[in-house]
Image 1 (cartoon, rainbow, N blue to C red):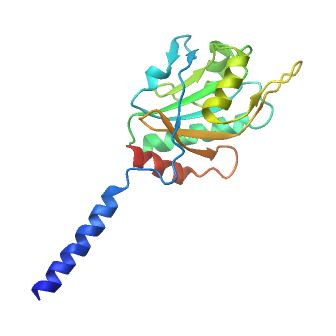
Image 2 (image 1 turned 60 degrees about the vertical axis):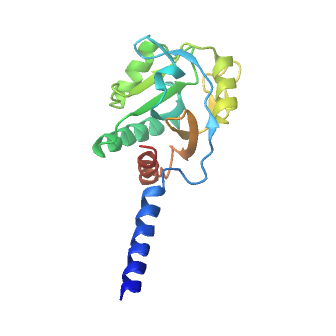
Image 3 (image 1 turned 90 degrees about the horizontal axis):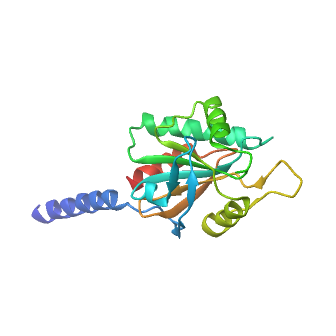
Amino acid sequence: MKFRLVMILLVISSMLLAACGQKEIKDALNWEVADFSAVNQDNKAVGLKDLKGKIWIADFIFTSCADVCPPMTANMTKLQKMVKDEGLKNVEFVSFSVDPTVDTPEVLTRYANQFGADFSNWTFLTGYSQQFIEGYAMKTFKTLVKKPQNENQVIHQTYVYLVGPDGKIKKSYNLYKDVPFDEMIQDIKILQ
């Protein structure tokens, strides 16, 4: 009897420890995020230091995008609402413009307002060169950004990136179609 009680307690303890122990995202990328210097939709300077210690979700969009950016931004708005509804704290949303010459702070504000973006924890960034954002996207996020000469559309991928409080990219997800909202929420919870 005593042996069986000890075994039951050991099994329960093991299960509890296993459940509490998952504070890491499975197969995390752990790519270091490089510093950047930008301005937000309010024309205020923003850099990596402003996101230090926070969980953040980043994407790459531009306001005159003819195809993928509107659904991506609508999906980001949905994710922002889900994060709020779940009561998750210390989560920021960051949208890097891939067309900084066109996307001034005022243009970004108008664009964001069309989608009902909540600026309390969503920042739209611009104020850097085209060359910078193309290099930064490739080196830091391992994603393509390219504006062909004499074109008004920018080539870019449709991923969104989860960055942990340690400043490392943990995971990427498709933000355009079949968006894994529940998986993203679960991964954010792991980082809380």
